[in-house]
Structure formats: structure tokens, C-alpha cells
Length: 80
Image 1 (cartoon, one colour):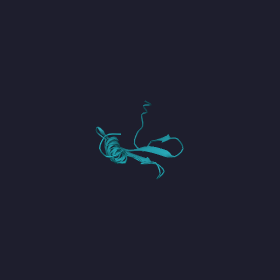
Image 2: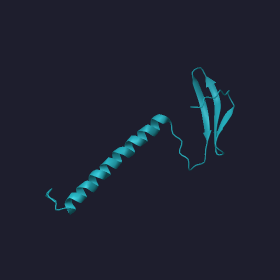
Image 3: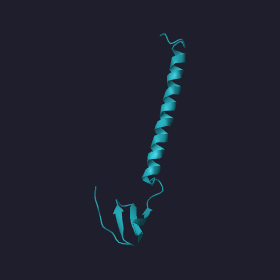
């Protein structure tokens, strides 16, 4: 992990297209701004993890549907 020290109104660049700016420091809270191309998703980590869990659950549901369809194609009685 790279750790940098920045003050209010200072920024860091990630590649050529992403700028992370410190907008304000208020006690233990820091307000940051992120400028990135629209095709790059930017999420708070807790939201990102929730999306990943939902995608995983949706994938499991799709797998169950495919398995059920394959069972039907195989005769439907569980014997192949």
C-alpha cells in the first residue's frame, strides 16, 4: 500500500485520468473528491462489497436455473 500525506486542496493522480483531491479535513473526517472518466466506476468500499455479494448471489441463482434445465434435458427423473 502506498501511503501519502496531503493537505486540503492538494491532490494525487492515479494514472493519467484519475485525480483524488483532499477537499477538507474536519477532525477525524476527511472529505475527498474523485475525478475519473465516466466509464470507471467509483464506489465506497462497503457499497462495492455489497454489489459483489449481490452479483455472487445472482450468479448462484442463474447456476441453479441452468442445472434445473440440464436435469430436464437429461430426462427429468434424475437418472441419466
